[in-house]
Length: 112
Image 1 (cartoon, one colour):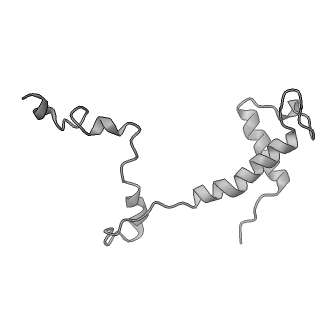
Image 2 (cartoon, one colour; image 1 turned 90 degrees about the vertical axis):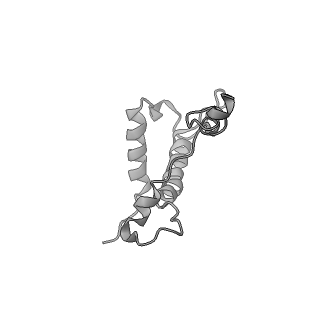
Image 3 (cartoon, rainbow, N blue to C red; image 1 turned 180 degrees about the vertical axis):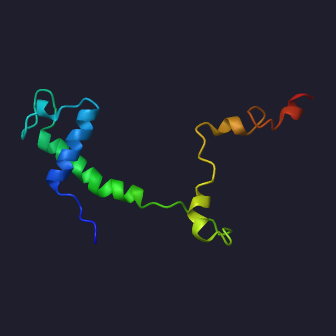
């Protein structure tokens, strides 16, 4: 049995429930017209935009698999799980290299 993509009505129900869970009430927006004074979008505009995000972006992200190194060897079925073991990118890479930082590299040079 193949998986059927959700209908617009099903996605709208999902979106409204998720937004209500974080305190956003779409019923405060006009159903069809955006407000020219405040610039707030219409309910239909918000729902349409989020439906598009869910249909295009989410599958692209969920289908992503980490790249597998050429030297993966005989990892077999575990090759993708092992590829996720690579260290994540560092927000501040300067603290891991150079004369200062947590790696201790270069400390003996500064003691001279």
